[in-house]
Image (spheres, rainbow, N blue to C red):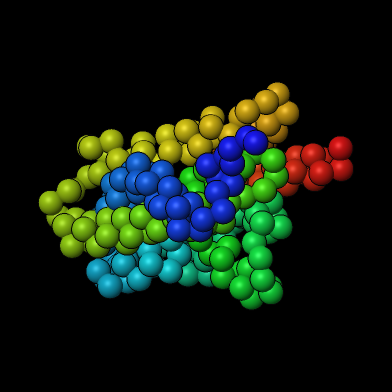
Length: 231
């Protein structure tokens, strides 16, 4: 009898631990990125507590950086919230794909879905349309801890770090997403969907508000998921 693949392990604890170990490299990157957010948030007028609470509740780099950028540029809180929501629109197709792998009533499934972050979602994907939820929980755990810890360090030590671009921290976020995208391109169909989403997003960057390109690219991914299910 063939052995059970790692992500199909029946032992939730073993799967959680495996996920936690796999999430450590991403957590390390998140620590640096969130430290830069802490610095920027303080420069934008956030209190230390506000910066930390935002990271603890939102836990989404793109949304947080976008919201701060809008506020610094003179935008309203409503505009910042709307743009942040658009930036997180990529979680719509991700959530739809994950949903069938989460057991329990709607409220419990929604609670489990709060652990979804880009790296964890990608790593927990078994490749057959299902996800290992315990691996997902485990890989998100160190990332969350480091995200909040990094923000705390940046908020308190912003004066020491100064301009984050000096250290290349401004390049971490796009490279992080590029690595995730490459890891998900496993066949021609996935490559085609990724390319289509990229073209749509890039064509909208200069002509639409922040967040709209991500929303459009997410809709392309959602369309690709729907096509796969109906094929």
